[in-house]
Length: 433
View 1 (cartoon, rainbow, N blue to C red):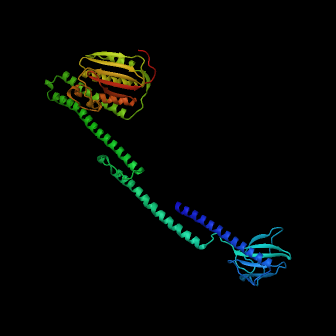
View 2 (view 1 turned 45 degrees about the vertical axis):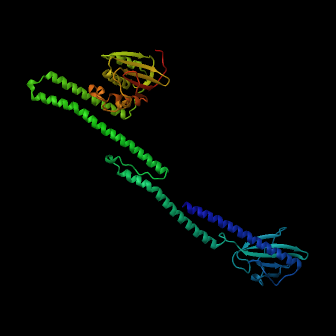
View 3 (view 1 turned 120 degrees about the vertical axis):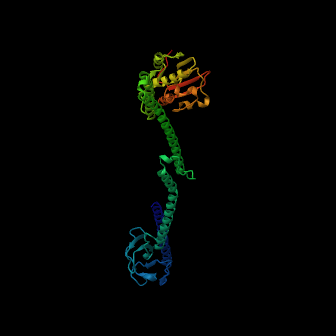
């Protein structure tokens, strides 16, 4: 449609230009004929039949209104027009349909020539130029418009087809990708255009989904194993007790079942907490003095190792106190399990954040394994095997809590043991401690 519109506009401009040129040429032709008639009148030399310079019809009338000479098509015919220039005007023009003795609409020019014996009149007529100027030109332009439009339509159709082919390939591949073959990727076209960028972005998204799905499957398998272990222990103990009721120490068996049940309950609670954290639910963040969280948590614990405190007062962070308490509890549980003789806990504020450090003097963790301990159900060496206590999700939960607060939880270098460093955005001024 656009191509046809452009061609039509260009064609109309050409026609208008040709029409104007034709009108101008005919006016010049009439002017030339009138100039020749002036010379004949001044010299009083009139041929019996005028020879026109083109297809114009010319008549020369004397002051008495008699035709003294004319071109062949109006020779012997009455004057083609009766109008004359008015007043001081020498020239006037009208369109007559038709002039006397002629056919069709014609532009007639009446020119007044003053002589000593009176006013002579020269009438010159030419056919009116139609709006299309030339029918052959109109047909040519129409044919060219159709050809150009058809060629551009075919070109656009082929270009759109080539452009949409990669999109169709991407759509077809996306339709076939399911959870069982999420490793598949959409084809990336060789052209570095928007479609290529789109295909690359889709594959990047699929990579993330594949990674997340793989992690979810591993997590599900590990969680199933962890839940199955205490359930199996409970069932075995109960079945043995029922098989030999008289030989069973029921209070001891009850304590063992209770311990396994508590471990199972702890694991389920941790899994539910992780699910809530993964869902990204909004937390009630309020400016809180972290020392007011750390100190009560340390006071309520009865640890077998020495706890050294370095707590700065008035260090405010925007946080959910309940979640931060859980984070701190997990770090302290981990430190108590692996400390040799002491744990150091510090709270301080720096320029942009609030820093909480929990350091134990245990065996420590190799630098290459520091990120692994934050993964869910990750097993390291026996010194940090989760079977020593806890659900195996404590550090994963701690990091997730830090991240939903916009902070970080990392393991940094220390002279001895393991140093966990929590950084949270500041939520107010720092007072003197």
